[in-house]
Length: 72
Length: 489
Image 1 (cartoon, rainbow over the protein chains, first blue to last red):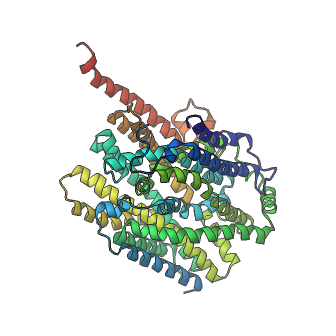
Image 2 (image 1 turned 90 degrees about the vertical axis):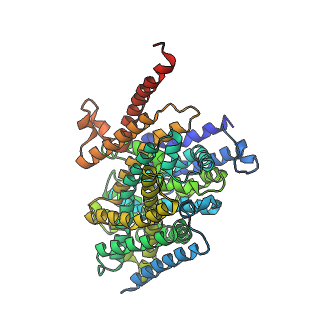
Image 3 (image 1 turned 60 degrees about the vertical axis):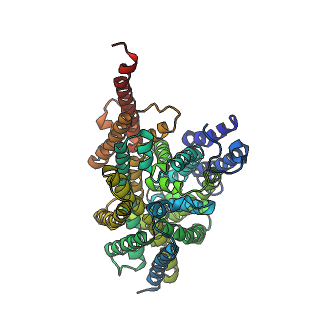
């Protein structure tokens, strides 16, 4: 898990830093201005990355109880 | 009364009926009334969490911002995703602590974590201050929908009063259960309508998305990308950071998170909810479609754009259906906000100051405060002036000031003292209030900064001051306590 959780940083960097480099209208991607399409892309990729994090996080494979996981 | 108004009125009545029906057979203790005794499963928490995002803010505010400002509206799509990613790690420890200590609200959480009732009161007051602009924007949205849908026969002021009365009645009667049932209806309706409009309007008026964006880019060059100054890339970055951190600092979002039965729900939601954000795209498309078709709306009127275009395009009955969805997007979150504000004042301010007060008295006070808070919001709504997005950003600037104190309290050894936390929150909130009320800029306060710094979101700049003050006061108070133990006289 420890390594995988860093995947979650990618959308943060992609959105907060990346937008500075794609701040233009052309070319339109799927009919949308480039900068808008870039953000949309990171929303989708962000969800996929969190699905990977969820699947590999051992906390989520333990039986669901009132106090799973304990203190970390 | 036209067809549009009939549909809207029936929807409001149905919302009230659902609120009443949800109440049946439940004993209303304060914990029942506010967090449904933490008994909701995944789907309901999903709807409550998702439901809060799809408020008037997104429906009218989001389309209005796309219409009036262009690219800056994109921030609305970005911040939720980052907030959900953060929630994967943020919400489970909050939920665990809340469950263990039977915490029912955010300020209760702060009071327990810092072992200071006063800090709880402070957090509650910040929450109430931030919730007022949020409630105001819901009422403003209601006013717009009802008055525009009545084709001018109902004034927007009267519509605000009607909406406020409806929210107040069903919150007083059924608490959070009313909200949950209406959230179900609302989410289905808004999803269908927004997707339909976002596809239909660009195709109908322009023949396609690429054609629409080319037309806008030709008519208003630079409108669809961030500007070099003002609402620039730097504005986007600081605004997204501020709102992502503040997302779960809202007392009502925090409260909704406490309604979950399992902590895993939060992690699962962190995977699914970002996709739900994509509805916002369709909202933007509506606003963009309106740019060349209903030109000329400026200032606070940009929020009318979606509705004006709908009226120009559809028959009254369908305008009524859109209006009904809009009314629900204001009523559902509005009721949650009203509930939070009233509970904060009764439970977290009044009871913290007078702990001997009986449970039933506090519950009664919370209910009694619902109409009072509603009236305050009506007052500010009728004052008017600001756009829906500006109102929400103001609320975010206030509420995010709680973030540093919250995140530190989750650490194994909290580096913050309660004095430090309080100092940071007070300074952060004061900075936001000063800059917003005096309309001054950051650079005029701190002239050594480059002019570009003016683009930084006010709330984000205040957050920096907050952290500095917190660190300084925490160090000082820790040192004041430490000598007794460590220094040899």
